[in-house]
Each structure stands twice: as C-alpha cells, then as structure tokens.
Amino acid sequence: MSEMEKNTVVENAVPENTVEENTMTEKAVVEQRVEEAVASDSRIEDSTAEKEQEDTNAEYSLNDDRRVKTLSPGAMVAKRFFRNSIAVLGMVVLLAMFLFSFLGGAISPYKESQLFYRKDVQSQKYAGVKVNTELRYQQAEKDAFPALAQAQFVLARGKKETEFKAGDKEFTYEEAGKDFYIISVKGTSDPVAFAAIDLVTATGAETPSFAEQLNILKAYSNKESSFSLDGANYTIAEDGTVEKDGKEYATAGRYVINTIMSDVKLSEEFKEKLLSEIQADSKSFTYQDADGKESVYNIEYDAPSKAYNIRQTREQMVYDTYSAPSKAHPLGTDKNGMDMLTRLMYGGRVSLYIGFVVVIIETLIGMIMGGISGYFGGWVDNLIMRIVDVFYCIPTIPIYIIIGAAMDALRVDPKLRMFYLMLILGFFGWPSITRLVRGQILTLREQEFMTATEATGIKPVHRIFRHLLPNVIPQLIVTCTMSLGGVILTEAVLSFLGLGVKFPFASWGNIINDVNNTYVLSNYLFIWVPAGVCLLLTVLAFNLVGDGLRDAFDPKMKR
Image (cartoon, rainbow, N blue to C red; front, side, top):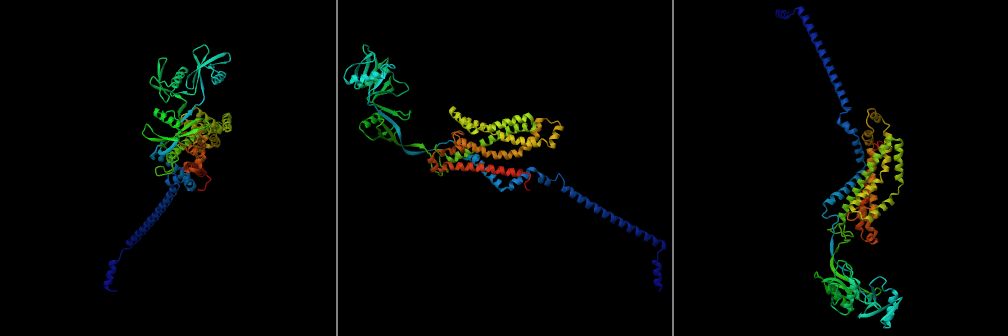
C-alpha cells in the first residue's frame, strides 16, 4: 500500500461508536417506514370497506329515488297498463271520442238545433171547398124541430103544402128566398127553425147565433147587401162574405171554403177567382199572391165527399231534410234540417255526461251502503243486503218505460227530463257496487292496520271512509269504467224508444231513432250509421280500458 492510500484510509476511518449509532438510526428509519406503510395499507383497506359499505347502503337505501320509482304502486299499475296494447288502444279511442264530442262541439260553426233551408217547388194542400147540395136545418132551440118534423116538412114541401103536423104540434113554413125556408109553430110568428142549402160559416172565433144566421141567409138569398140586427150593422158581399160592423164575421153560400192552415186568410179576390174557376170546371189556375209571387193552384174534385181539394204549387223555402253529405254538411242533414255532424258531436257530449253522472251517483250510494254494511255486519248488514235483494228483483225496464210515458204525458221540459233520467238510472244501479264494496271491506276489516285504528281510538266513521274505502278504490275504478259502457247503452236504448233524451237535445240514441222509418233505414245510411259507430267504439273502448285496469291492478300479473 502506498503512502497516499494509507493517508486516505486514515482520513476515511470512522470511530466504532459512530458506526453503531448510524446502524441503529437506519433500523429505526426502516421500522418507521414499515409502520407507515402498514398504516397506509390499513387506511386503504378501511376506505375500501367504507366505500363498499356505502355502496351497499346506497343500493338498499329507502330514500333512493330509483328504488321509490320501482316500488311505487301507481307507477307499477301504470307500467302494466301501458304495456297492454289493447288497453292503450281503448284509451286512445276514448280520448278521440272526448275530443270529438267536447272540443268538436265547441269549434263547430253550427249550433246544436240550427235549422237549414233550401228552395224547392212543392205542391201541397192549400184549401178545401165543400159543395152543399141538400137542405140543412138549423134550430132555434134543442129539439124545437126534431127529425120527425123534418121528414114531415119534406113531404109537405113535395106536395106544395105550407102546413104540416108532427106529433102533437102543427107547423107552417114560408119560402123566404131561393132554397131558403123559415119554419114556425102554427099560430106564432117566432121561427123555430129554418132550412137552406146555403150555409153560414164563421170566419172567426165567434159563432153566429140562430137569429144572425137566419137574417144573413134571408138577405143573401134575396141578394140584399145589408141589414141591421140588435143594433149591429151587417154587410154581405156578392161572394157571400159577411162583415159585422166593418169586420169580417162569416161567409154565406153553398160553397164552404176552408184553409188547411188556420193562420192563412184568403182574400176576397182569391175566393171570387176560386169559385169562378170551380163553376167553370177548370182544373187549375194561376194567381198572384199578396207577396207578389205567382202560384199555380190545382183543383181536384173528390166525388165521395163532394168536395174540391185545392193544391198550391210554388217555389218556397223548406227544411233541408235528408240532404246528402256535402262540403257544407259533411254528414248531411237529418229529418229536421239540422247538420248531422254537429248533432253527432253534441249527442256524444250528452251521452258521456249521462254515463259519468249516473256512474258517480251509483258509486256514491254503493260506497256508503257497502261500507256501512261490510264494517258493522250483524243486523245492519242483513238489512242492507235485503234492500239490495229487493232492488235486484225490481223490473227496471218496465219502470223506465212507465216513467218515460208519464213524463211524455206531463210534457216535462227536455232539460229537466234529462236530469230525471240520470237520477233514475243512478238510483236503480247502485246495488252491484254495494255488494262489491261490502265484500272487499269484509276482507280488509280483519287485517292488522284496522286493529291499529281501533287501538288508537279512531272513530268508526273515519275507519270506514279514511282507511277502508280508499283500499277499495282500485276495484271500484275497474267496475265503474266497465259500467260506463252499459249506462251509455241503456240511455241509447231509452232514447231510441223515445223515452230518454228529447228534442231539441241530441244523444246518440235519439239520433238512431230515425231508423224506425224503413225508408230512412235503407236509403239514408249517413243518418244513423255514424251515431251507431260512435256508440260502438265508445262502449268497446270503455270495456277495453276496464279490462286493462283490471289486469294492471291484479298483483298476480307478471312484472
């Protein structure tokens, strides 16, 4: 070893105690680092365990939104319902019917009872002319000139004798004009009767008295233009029109003219024209009416009745009945000249109104009666169930018919009649719901939550209406949904028979009522087919929705 290397060794030499101290320090550092590593691993393990515990707690946490959605009864029912494509189809149809009936009626340009007219050339019976060819008798008092006396008069007149006897009375007569005879009791001057071919017909509400008729025919037979009687002045025109104190009072003549419509008054010119045409044996004539329109009048003689029928042919405004579908009326018009599409919309509104109101009435009565019966049991249950049995035995259809006929006889207002119809249908429809509610409550009242309500001192009324009946709601929803179709059908049948909803209100039932006419049934399909289709779709949709709800509420359904 060189001197330099020796010096280096000496310089780098460390004392023995110093080496030992360094060795102890390194061991401590290593142990400390090992302890820190172990502590770190322990913390990591604890953190991992805590995280796993948190994840586990989060998965089963009752406050987790995902778990609430999964276990919500309403959500589960809705999910099962919308999984049923047939039930969804029924819901869509129902929604369409509601929009058609309520929204469609609101936006329709026409009103429910709006009438439509069209111009048409029509020939209708306008007047009648009766020709009298036999002597007719008018008596001053009843039985003053009986049938036996009339027969004796005819014999005396044939023999040209002025006196005749009938029973214990003797009569005399005088010919006061052409085909006019005044008859009196022998020895008196007061007439007891007269016989004439010409007749006096009142034109107003007042009927001429015996004395007035006698003087009118006497003046008319002798072609006198006026006379006075009891302070009243009478004038007689050539055509037989009689005026009393300047007002038209009666007509005289063997031609008796009557109008078909009581509010139609024939002018004197028309009467003269008509009688002249009849006497000329014409078949028709033209006459310009007061409104400036010319009309053709046809004269038809009826031999058995010895009368003339006058028919008027003219262009006039008439109801636009049974008009075919067009741009203005997509479904045509009905027998009253009303738009069928609008009537169909309002008819759906009325039918749905009645269906829902009746079901609500049935449900309210059924829930109250069934809840009381099922909860209390004993004699209360027996009493209510016997009442239900009695209602089941009542023949409802005959009762509906009797009540409908009674309302027809009393002429009940159509709106009030519709209200009565809903009350009657609801009153007779509650027993089935009562039995359903009673059966459900008999099961529910034995469960633990009812024991808890008793233990906490809740009143029986609150137990029934706050705890029992809410648990029956799902079954009631299904039953009521399926009952709606039946109620709508019942209303339709009653309206079809004329015992339900009355004009001017429309319902699908009274719209189909037009098929009572065989001609309408076969030739105007657009009148009743749309209403029948709407009725069919609505009832079918209610049944499909009811089936879907029943399956959705069934806990045994696959999830």
